Length: 189
Image (cartoon, rainbow, N blue to C red):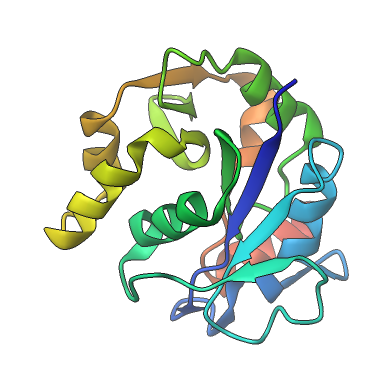
C-alpha cells in the first residue's frame, strides 16, 4: 500500500466548547489522543495542523496554517503542502469515536481516479474524514484567495467520491461541538 500521511486539523479555540477542541477530555483522554490511537495502525506519518503550542506535549510533527483564519479549507491546504504523500487522510480533531476499521475502509475504497473520497451517512457528507490528493492544492489555493471557504463548495470543484456508511457505525462520525454534546457523549459511553 502507498504511504499515507494523516493530518489532524486541530483548528482554533472553539467558542461553543470554550477551550481547545482537540484537548477536550473524553473517557479521561483528550479527543486528539483517541483519534491518533485510531490512526496509528494505518500510518505513523501523522501531522497536526495547529497554530498553538497546546499540542506540543505530543511528539508528532506540527504544522502551522499557511494562511490564517481560513477554516478547514486552509487547514487542508496547509496539510497537503507539507505532506510528502499522494494519499492524505484528513481528520478533524472533534471525532473521538472514530475507529481504525472505518479509516481503513475509507482507504481501501478510495479510488485513485478521484481526488477526494469522503464518507456520508443519512445524506450528510463528512468532508473532515476524507482522503485528499495533493493534486487539489491549486484549487485550495484559489478558494483561499477568493475567500470561498465552504467545504461543500470545495467538493463541487474537485473530482470526488462519496462512500455511504449506514447503521451503527455512523455514530463514529459524531463530532462534538459544545459542552452539552460532550456531556451527552460522556453519559452514553
